[in-house]
Image (cartoon, rainbow, N blue to C red):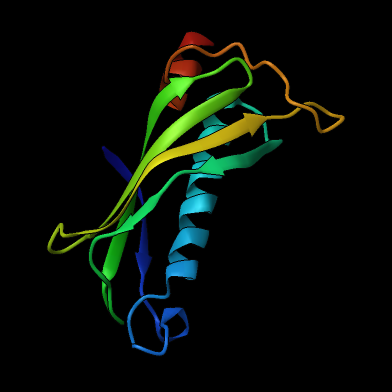
Amino acid sequence: MNYHTRKWVKPEDLNPNHSLFGGRLLQWIDEEAALYAIIQLENTKVVTKFISEINFVSSAKQGDIIEIGIEVSSFGSSSITLCCDVRNKMTHQTIITVDKIVMVNLGEEGNPLPHGKTKVEFVKDRLNSQL
């Protein structure tokens, strides 16, 4: 699992129990999944179609630094399926796991559009192939 994003848990991210609000964490995960899909599919018109069962394993508290890991599970003709783990940066304790996040590639009219991708590509490899 590659961890691409770090977040610092601040007072505005807390629930009444003084731990990280689950909705805030899901917002961060959805944004990270969208960014990952946009970069992989090379299209800014990507939407979340499905998020599977979410397993809250432990909590985070104010001051914690968490990191969000995203990995590709599979490619569909117009979608990309991801999995996600979030952990405490310092202790590596798992905070949440999401087995399946399906992101759909859209065309100009907002309908699913085949993307033609079959494997993970890294931006540095794309740039090198253009030289």
